Length: 223
Image (cartoon, rainbow, N blue to C red; front, side):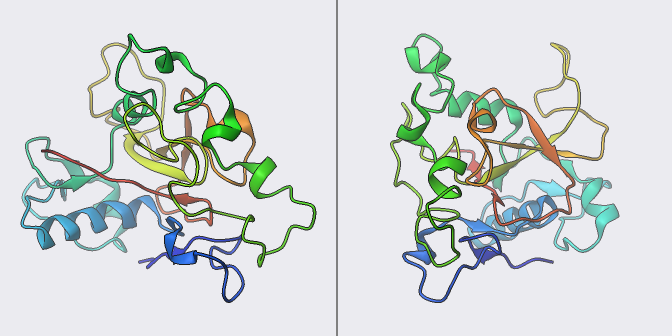
């Protein structure tokens, strides 16, 4: 339903000629859009799509049908592109190794936020905030330091959609998340929000049909 924009500024587009706009993460994408895009990219890449309608047989191809997308089911055996689960997202953000000191860093890859994240202090609260300022809004990917497994921007820049429904989880919650609830999880913080939202442990959520200039996604794929 939403084609997305090249993220820059509060509108997601920025002023004409904004520096390196095409290197910035795509924004203005809803959770609905993201899972349908994943299916399309899977098919284009000759992989098995992951997301189906509630009948477990019909591939999701239309993000405008809220009922179908809200009730999507997740084929865990498929090898296609998909959103990470919340647990996968945090595991990757922490560096994937519990014995490494990075595992306990507040931000992905560092104990100092400015080393790894674009957030409100360096992306919004500028001397003269303006859509045309290349330091305002979402930034080109990979322009801060990576975490221990080479992933960039898992803290800050843009919020990233996860598969999971939002709610209280326990040790008995399935690996793919809760089975009920309307809101969907987003993680990582963004350029518009403060440092606390960029912490790898911070859990947030949004309406699955929502879009914003500081909200996008990253994909995972089975080997």
